[in-house]
Length: 88
Ligand SMILES: [Zn+2]
Image: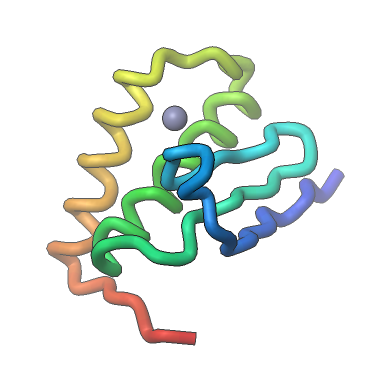
């Protein structure tokens, strides 16, 4: 069965003092629309994606420090490979 795609919604999350959050059931990521840099924006997207992947692998409560460790590794690797954001 084909899985749901990941939906990304940009909004202001300042009130919650978070950069992103995700819904594991509907595979939706909400991301703060004003990140300090495009690198930080990429990092948040990766972070929330890792939560979705961990949940799909049967670990919805994967420790936050592991998520952050992989977020940093993957975002650094993609950045070093030259991936950048083109403003939509
Ligand atoms: Zn997290």
